Image (cartoon, rainbow, N blue to C red; front, top):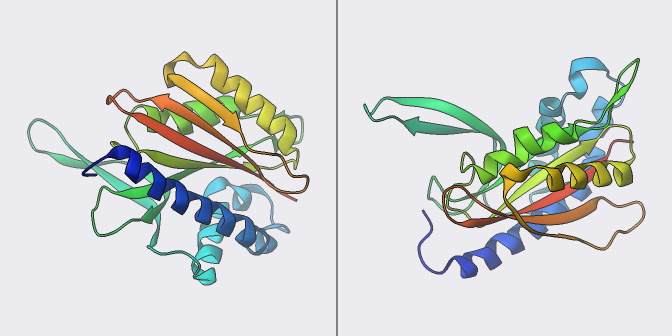
Length: 211
């Protein structure tokens, strides 16, 4: 649990997120190279994330420890503990179990034989909403989402995700801003939400183009 002024923690989380985002961008080519010749389930988001984390670990550019499928335990009123869910990727911060930079990963614009599935709604409902509901990053000031844009068109993916966010009342959107778009680089933007647990959380989004 965080102790002290949450705004001070926000600065530390933001600095770490920027470093992680830079590392993700640098590791992305290494991550996708072994997967490009494969099809089907091997290009599912879990397989992509596995390769990405392996590439990040090899760079040795970040403090903390990367944990895939970070387990979240919950205890009911009868003190029965169960595994409720798992976060795709966590970068640990210090020794506290509940202080971490979480990253949820989702595919977007996935081509199939007959059509391309947008999956912007799923990005919001099954990803972003987990932070707003306090399921992930409870009590923490900042989190991340990665969008793997499987048809390369990150501009359209960005437009569709922003539209899905604006239409979803449950995510309690308080503000949103886009980073400067640089051609050939990932698209980055931020959203801030009022969590059901009573605090605000900023989510930093990075959309990566699958070549």
